[in-house]
Image 1: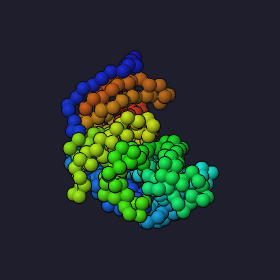
Image 2: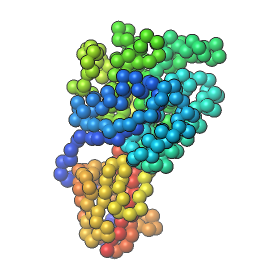
Image 3: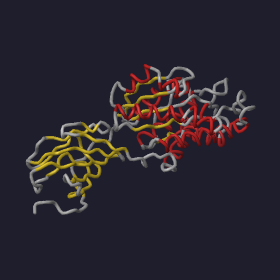
Image 4: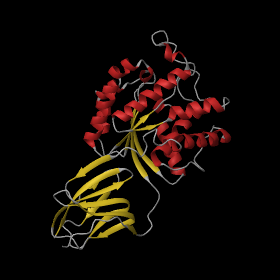
Length: 345
């Protein structure tokens, strides 16, 4: 028979470019727009050879419930195929009693996730774990004493954001954990504005550094430092963000979720990785629109896997031993699995 034997092999092709550009949509409120967090992440990315193309929907005080019916948010979700959509809840709400959060917050987070994936099944959802107020939530302390202190409020925020991510096969950017570590180790760095809630310039830099590591999975050595921020403080923030993210990737569900995308037709685009496969039908080999590093498998119409391989910086793949017919090629890159229908003549 002309079928490939089932095996795992490695293909080394030419070296690809390590620079990355991510399309990122931020959905949140003032914790995102104060000090222009998206642009600060962009400046860090640019300084390290990467980039983000971003948009935001961040009306002040908005909850997930408000966003779930807010026309501009829904329009921006559907505006293009996003690599990442960042979800940030109203700053207090996820810290409330778990029973209340389960009713007032989780269903609307789920609704937004469904809208995001309906637009693009390859989009990665990342929850923005925020920080507790400097001295706890005084306004709501009488109703739920756990949040009377910063530590109690931070604990509940961490718990709720992780549960929302687990419930939605999503990831978490642990900004609040980086924030807590800095509070514990260097009290000279003021992370809050005078309202004891919103971030100072240093606080936004904490968020930006944590997000860069969460999205790009790269260190911050030599990263952009905003004017007005002490350079030693900035380097300490960079180091703390790195260790927070990279030492606990599984905790934050980063690179542990597995997003499955399906495309019928070889000329469809893997929206998360911007990959096109051509020609269709093919005679002897297929080409990729960019260098591929990742796992690849091919199965027949019965679902039997007949070919497995690991590609490293490859732009083409020879497939001369297949019988004519229809096959399904699955490609896994950065934990995103995309399936293409291919036709061999």
